[in-house]
Image (cartoon, rainbow, N blue to C red; front, side):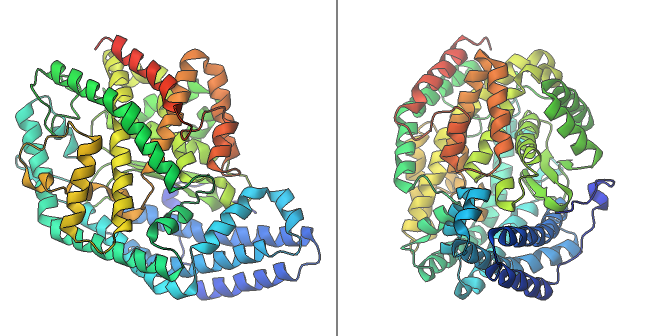
Length: 568
């Protein structure tokens, strides 16, 4: 593959809508050549050509995705996004044909020796997730997912005479003044209350169309299809259920202790839902500068962390591969994607003046550094690993950057570390709540929106017993989940954060003990990309599987002790 030289910035990257009819014709010609190849070397050569074609198509898709989310009001990229909503299922169909040819290849054993078994495992799972008969249903699923994104991106929240979106309001939700927090939370949830019926209708349609897709493909329900879509080759829903139980057994009690300590620090009898994100009475630590200053500190941090991260971050800056500040019309949240033709990761976020700016920057930089490290693996499937492995890179990078937190927070660095580590631990019960909720939803696709909400409230009470909604009816009825984009856009992804968090905690512990050894393991993991399955990558990095009984105990015990001894 000939990669375009990076002599321009992302702003100047060329976008051209692919002619899908011509693309499909060329793709089929390549498949025919693959089938009629005379030896394994010829088949490998065709595989590289097919990979180049896919790289060109997905690069255009990702440039469109980035520019659309940078400004969801841009009419040109809105139309282009609609085009991909329609064409991606057909593109998936072509890739499925490639996988079918791969699995039936005359020289499969030689190809598997050259490319490794993971590509063939991915192909087998992907084959189960697509058939031409479900293309229209997949298009409908994409359309509904985009609809939810647009609902949230269009949020206009009036707060004390200022207009905010769902990102910028957050700094008031963690204000040190309780009345401000309560008012800001009410303002945000007022938006969701006004949109509740519309959001529930979108989700109800999503659940039903996903169930129809699953049934058409021979699954009992969407859960099996979702696991195959997520490319989970070495664990299943039963193992995940046991993982959730381990979180309930080992993590929930510690988190409840942390919430009680938090209430004591804040001098509150009980924490309300709008108190949970405020860690300290004087307010949470905040970065001591504007976005450009934050990036300058990050540049120094990555230069000092390692030669590899220094080179990586210079590339990101020089090529304009970060859009960090929130603004009207910009999609919510943060993500990292990869533009293969330019070998370029892209970091997208919504800075809002809180410590979350540093968390999201280091988190997404972990993703970007990994894909930058494995950008030359030679096959698209190996550039990224499966998503739960991806989240190890991002969450661990948050911890590897701890020694530089004083650059961002100055004298508040210690409190930031306490808040960061305790928040990471506190996330786990919420993460498994989202996962258990999705299992309920797709095991029972015909239940009403009200029954789904009631199920969320039951699950929430199981894992988050401290949650007190202060009589807010919308949330008491179980609608908190409606803010979580993953539930709508990437179903069953959320447990990946919880699995990866356990692995990232192990890197945190190893880094405390021997930084050089820990960084060496992390770098090896990043460079491996997606060439192995999740549990194989975990083993390669010298980590213990989060599915092993009692795997939490040792690491979480160290974290508990560290938090107990921290002076905050």
